[in-house]
Figure 1 (cartoon, rainbow, N blue to C red):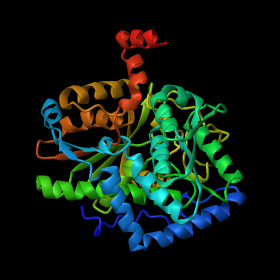
Figure 2: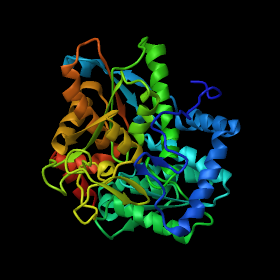
Figure 3: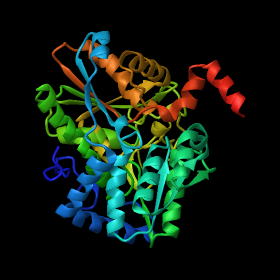
Length: 420
């Protein structure tokens, strides 16, 4: 994909209006002290989008630093195993830092540099966004602080180690549920205190305007590459289905965006079903039952919340999907019926993880394994001439401690004990 010709700024009927509203969703519900900073960011991004130099610099980073384009791989063994549609894997795990998070981190870091900021802050759950943020901070010479809930800090310890090696300060968050939601709150509080010299590098397609649109734009490179790769490598005009996991929704909106206008392409987002969706606190599936709209962390969307509007506890085996809200554009896509949102349980995710590893030699992140779990359900129901593209948003290195415990690997536990 030519870095001089790629235009990631695609307009669709689902775009936000000038005030950042995706119909009933989105907006800018932020503390008064942050409004000037958000307006400054909106103005800077609006200008950067029209600047050919900015676009060229971003594409250069994508290609020569990130390692794009990532492969679109025909999963022949998995296809034959499931005996249904042809399955193609967009392997974002082969990005620098191991996940799609580097895409919007590079874009935002480039923007922060143009704005003259000196420090970057971020929230992270699975650690992949924190790792990507620490990486771009090191490259561009920013000071960096990453906020992480204590629960996620403990279960994603490998990424904490790497963030610290890159020079980032990783700050544990002990309040609330000690998960991603609470890390977001802590990051916003830091930004209020240090707004003049600090850039908040937000980790998903959510938050106050303009973040949802901006993160989507930087992730659209994924879907654009899929279009070109299907055509040029496999002589396929378009996929029949695209499947991606959805927490906040950045990887999904990135691969969906170029296809939103084409209603013949079915789009499926997969939420975290955790231990099952029957009981609140045991899952992170916002769009399956008892669907409620609310305003949290600067934007309006669907959230898991009680009758008083308080955000409920969540659970997922994957830290990156263990979040009570969903990005506002996804809210609109759900309301309009353009995207179908399903869920996968922890048990189904572990089965999908093992199947992909043993059939294709690919170890997915637990977040991405949610999408594979849906492929396992969907592909066998389709004819062999149908095409399914699944966005493998990251690789599973970071999940070794979670997986070893979940799969009962005694040898790994004995190894860890021997090193203590």
